[in-house]
Image (cartoon, rainbow, N blue to C red; front, side, top):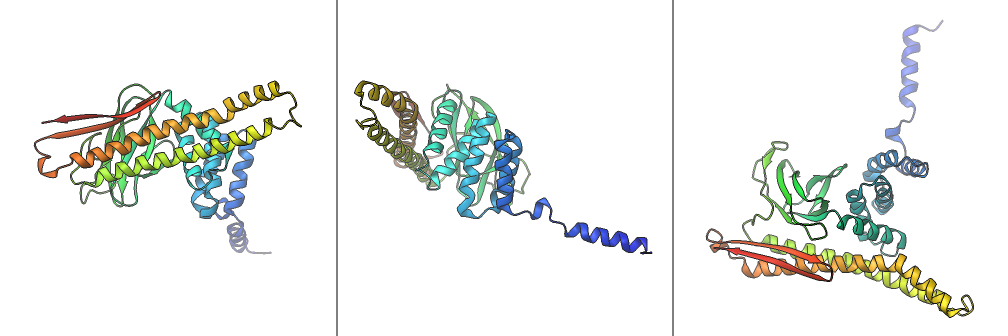
Length: 319
C-alpha cells in the first residue's frame, strides 16, 4: 500500500500543476468575457474585461475598451461607458462607425443629466478615483451630476482628497479640478487637496488647460470625420437609380438614415468643439492674466461655458 502521506503530497502536487484562472491565457479570458456578454451577464463580463485589460498586448487593449463601453452602456453606467469608448476612439479607431455611434448616444444622454469635470495633475503617473474601477489617469475627465463630491487623487506614494463641487444645470461644461500634492504626503493619509477652481502658483496650469481643450477638439474632429464619411456613404447608396429608382422614396430613406446615423455624430462634434474651444480660450486668457507677483493681491477665476449653439467662458477677477 502507498503511505497516506505520500498519497496526499502527490495529490497536492498534481492539483498545483493544474492550470488555474490566474494562469489562463489573456485572450482566452477575453473570449470568456465576450461569451458572458453574449449571454446577457454584463456584470460578469465587466469583471473579466477589467481583470484582463493590463494582461492583453497593448495593440489589443482597444478591444477591451470597446467591450467595456458596450457592457457599461447596457448596465446603465454611462460615465464608465463614455470613458472606455472615448479611450477606444482616441486609440486610432475613428473608422469604427458602431463605436462612434455608441459614444455619440452616451454623450447625449450624459449631457442631459451630468456635467463633464476635468481633472488636472502636474505630476507624472498621477490618477484620480471615480466610477467602479478605481483609478483613472490624470489629466482626465469624468461625468458628475450636480452636487458635492470627495475624490481621491494620487501620484507615486502621495495621495490627496479633492473636494469637487459641480454647480449649475446639466449640459454645461463642468469645473476644472486642479490637483496639487504636498511633499512627503504618504499614500492614504487623506490629506486635503485644493478646492475646485483654486488657482495654483506658476504658469503650468494654463498650458494644461489649453492642451485639454485641444484634445477635446481632436476627439470632436474624429467624430466629424466619421459623420462625414457616413453621410457620403448614405448619399452614394440612396442616389443610385438602379437600386432606388423612386427618387422620392430614396430621399425619405436617406433623411431617416441621416437622422439616426449621422446627426448624433454631428451634434456630439459641435458639443466637443464648443467645450474644447471654450477651454482653449480659457487657458489662453489665463496665460495673459497670470502674474505670480500679483497673486496675493488679486484672485482670478475662469470657467468655460457652453449651451445650444453657443460657447464661451465666464471670467471673474477680484481685487
